[in-house]
Length: 430
Ligand SMILES: Cc1cc2nc3c(=O)[nH]c(=O)nc-3n(C[C@H](O)[C@H](O)[C@H](O)COP(=O)(O)OP(=O)(O)OC[C@H]3O[C@@H](n4cnc5c(N)ncnc54)[C@H](O)[C@@H]3O)c2cc1C
Image 1: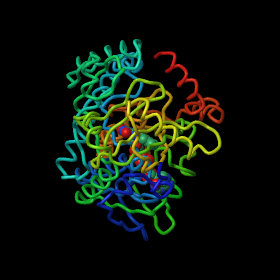
Image 2 (image 1 turned 45 degrees about the horizontal axis):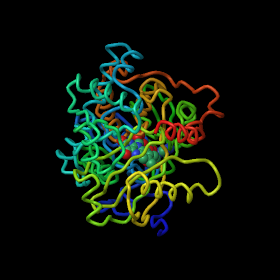
Image 3 (image 1 turned 60 degrees about the vertical axis):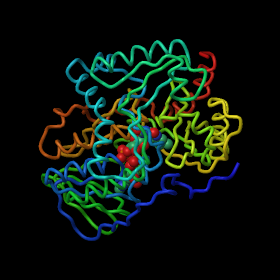
Image 4 (image 1 turned 135 degrees about the vertical axis):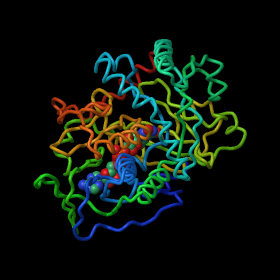
């Protein structure tokens, strides 16, 4: 196995990216209608959609565009919720707000691929579908109900029996599953960079290496301070996800910070590449210890997994994920590990996207839960309506003050700590 070949903290996508364009740090004072803290998908999609309405907007990014989760994910475009289905969301939020939120998610992948087409973003995007194969009889039952619920809402979904899953994925052993044809895969760093270019073309200002140190209420707006500049803004969006650091004091106890690892192998030999995923979809199965896989444009196999606590995790976990490939994909020989990296996801206790009310005209947005590409892009479109005057309560997303998770100091690592139990339950299912 070759060792990881990318600088620590970045990803395959940064290493192979072609369209990197430097942007200046903010110097001096700036006055805008909307200031956005964070240059990931959420900040960039909001900037693009807001600028397209003719509203002045600036993005302040502490590092570089796509430095956070947006540049470290697996590139699956998934138009549904992790662990939640339309009917239970409607039971939780009521018919009107529930259907709004379900509708918001349902069209989210289409929005991503439409933007890519409209702005000619070169990011190896393929709207080939997203497949969820079932690993156990109870999981199969769940996928049957899930596909019906989305199909009833007009989504391009299809139930898959065992042979259909085998034909589409090239993997034996799954009992069936389902596919949403509007999903797909892309190169996330190039997508983020393309969104940034499109936002700038529409009139947005984007600053890199510009860390926001403070946000203070000032008159009828907000004052943001950075090391070498300041911004006065009527409204502010905090789009820092799980990377907010000192800035997110009010937010950090509202989500579980989840460390996720990703790996990419060397390109696969042709005979194996044509057996696995000949249609180029993205796959994420029903295991609690989720197994995902896809190919990039160079036929590298990409998969991921969670972090188990203990010494040497940064080396141990990528190797364990790499070995799991051979088992799950029935590979005679696993191609060498070429890249490994990790990123932080902000996971909400109820796995739903949300807007957090931090004050008059100050909002934070979280849409991750492992489905962030499509959801953050959609959230950005919705937040442009907020920038344009729509009340946050009238947007199709839950909106509430910060709700700290009880005993967060103890429970914040629960998703990682419970992983061995999840793995055991997966084994018992099978
Ligand atoms: C390993 C991994 C794999 C994933 N796989 C998928 C997937 O396949 N499909 C999918 O849909 N989702 C996936 N996700 C989730 C998805 O990547 C995220 O939901 C999405 O990228 C979040 O975007 P964002 O803009 O909210 O935040 P981020 O992309 O995390 O951006 C936050 C930005 O804020 C900046 N920032 C922080 N503090 C400050 C400050 N004070 N001043 C200025 N800037 C600041 C950071 O530098 C960072 O760039 C994955 C996540 C991880 C971690």
